[in-house]
Figure 1 (cartoon, rainbow, N blue to C red):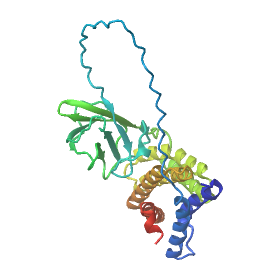
Figure 2: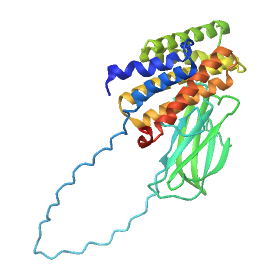
Figure 3: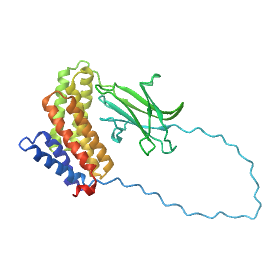
Figure 4: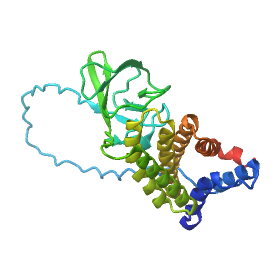
Length: 326
């Protein structure tokens, strides 16, 4: 993909969501979709890795001497090692590769773990056990079935009307009393408010997000993401100090949406189709959540436009090429 052509398009289109009031809604949507389609139409699937060539077979030297039989050796069966399962934080209740990290900022609502059991060819129902901060008592236990026609098991926990508390979350996949896989993720503890003024922090957050949007409008993706990453710890402090502030939670979601859009653009440039879809999925989920919980009318409207446009992009990316040409 031509970087000089695609680099400004995605970001400028996203930023223009709140700046095109002189155009009709249909005109704005058509313009955004055409621009995004131009970028995303060239996104290809990640190339499969090639297997190394097999070594040529060599003949073993033969000997005319009689071969002595070796004494039988008894072996002890070694226990099967416990697999490591991936745990992602995600804006939706669905596994996301982009969220597979060791730790993330405070503000997550959903955690989803994935266990790929293809090596042991499991198809049975497993039990998942979630614990918090290495506690003995589970915070969640449930049965888990694999995805249809696969050996992939997904299971998660979520807070519908609140945020997951800081700390370590661990999941175990069990077959009866046998532990098959284990994984964990940590949500960082925000810096305490201390002697700082909450209003001052809130203003700093607003300025940072506004500057991020300005950088998006100017097609400076790296700067936009940096402003959002700077704002996230401040947002965490503000959310913990004032858990009832829905607008601050919406700011968190918008910051994550902007970061995800930047990652979407980079995946598109790298022609990594699965990664591009995943980041678009994440961006849309964050924007959708922001539009749902925001109380400020302007913030809610901007988030809704982001969510709508990104959903249209997801729909477009999932449309078969044969239908796009019709």
